[in-house]
Length: 362
Image (cartoon, rainbow, N blue to C red; front, side, top):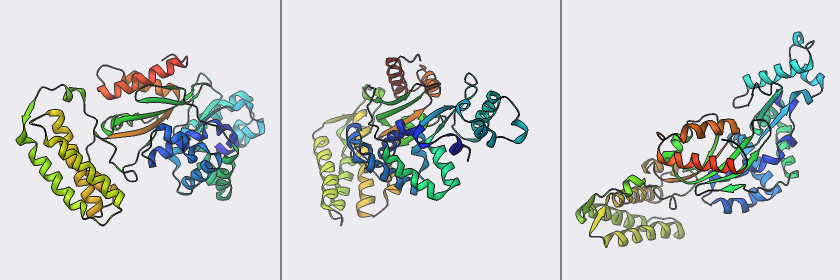
């Protein structure tokens, strides 16, 4: 229970709303403007209730987007002493603060320590809540009620085509929170390999896929390959057949109409083509997969979490990314390299530009 002895909830108050953005990104198909106006993000009372539900489910990962640093020499010396073995309590206060910072860094996953600031430790709200739950379940749930006392609006600091910088802490090694949109799951598979960072990604278990079209690489779009109509016809016939089955499904009319209208529109649009490009073949394959997905969910009554197995990795997604600026810089360094794939290069460059706009040397 080290963290709750050293930090309090107020230390995290400025960044608590980022946890709500991360969580709503998981469960919503809305864009950033929608999320910023969602009461579960914008209203302190609704936000506290929403986060309390996540806390009830022990969904700790979203709370990693809220972060705070503390110089342990600012603590009362007896507080430091209670966190260290008796054999260390006779040391000078600064030495004890350094040892305590190292103790936290070595035992708390994704806490942050830098020898340049030997008495400083950085931890997330996740660390605080996990410690609080271990200390007292009653106090743990009361912590979420206290979150309603903090009315800190989110004011994005900068925007590029795919990336918005929604939060920035400048103390010590800093902490940055990014909202990344209209990128593929192929790209996020690469992104999450940077395990020092924290992520909250749109869920395919809970969010419908009808708006998340395929991200098609530039190399495919630029390909000069052409195919005759006979290569397209089997796709359209199958999509038409699946549409007829979905039309008979016993589901809500709005869900049925969305799926059926999408398939009808696609078949009509592509039925006019006399030849198709490689890009068209990608789109046809994507729409065929979505038709099977709709068939599975609406007719087969398969859960979305299982039906999604048919969907391509190139589908659009949204993800919130956060981490210390030092680890964000590490990501940028590795992924702006010319050998990195085009999509993750674009995102890394946009992050770099947004941080530089804030006067941060990357």
